[in-house]
Length: 438
View 1 (cartoon, rainbow, N blue to C red):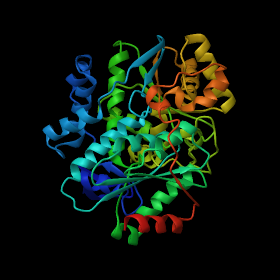
View 2 (cartoon, rainbow, N blue to C red):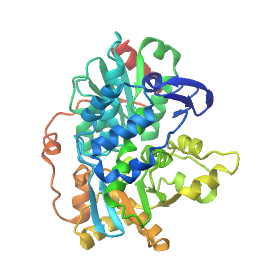
View 3 (tube, helix red, strand yellow):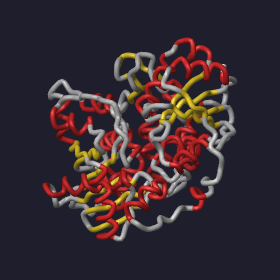
């Protein structure tokens, strides 16, 4: 498997280099040189495969021998060891539950797979690897859980002060050991910008082995493609078109779905669902991409004003025959919703279906509902990205009733928070990194 930068398709690197670099030197993003198709009989026989078998077959096809099959089987078995069940609201509306992993968020799939891949490729290295990751909520907890006590790897999580839920914050600040948390006095976009600056700083990269665990790292996207096939397996009836509705912030989850589609996933359409941080839905309507500072909302993991993976989406849909915008709008529709609408959707789903959907999934529910008003003869799958208990205070306020907290989350409540408060000045981050890891 070879990968190129979205800013320079002629400069190819190996999978190992792409994973450890995270970000190319030219500030582009890595993409596979070629996205292979799954065999037709794989799609036909999906119901016969377990989720782990699906994950292995998709990974083996996409990675094209970058890792020996026996080692890849070991990576998959350790990373993808929890389910991704589809819950039925009604025949046309389904919910793909992606919160059954250790940190109760969909990002467990990417974080655990990436941890295993990095551990595999890092076996013969004598220098410690330092992973930088920016989080708007769930990424930090998933990465912390995925890399906790991994030999030879240290993790530094940057998160926006006061802009993640209390339990989310505990997930990324209370583990200690090889996990460090930096509480940034700014937004997620500020955290993301600091991480990118660190990678582009020559003196840092020469002194410290840096890598990224955000969805800018290609090893995060690869496993997220697995559960699209798993979901399709559970709902397809052979005649009704299947659409995927993806609550989106940095757009890695949707990009993974698009890669799965290129590999042969029979998805009829994709829906990009956002809160009022709606730069991608606005692009889909107007053809103009106008990033702006993010605004805090109920669905905090989607509070992104300049999504990194939009670059990958543009790359996937670029063509000499037709405009990128025309190609993208043929495959993706975009919708955006306010906090008021989101809260009403949470109440509606609870009342109508006796199902507790969290704020990100509720945005997805609204977007699917809007899409199906024009396309009623479809099966829509909403990606439910986190457990409702991760947004405990908001959920209980909206529903006016207690939310059950899973034991592994409740156990964090009384653990002490350990985080370093830091400004948005890159010089401060650089000094801290040099002090602790140089």
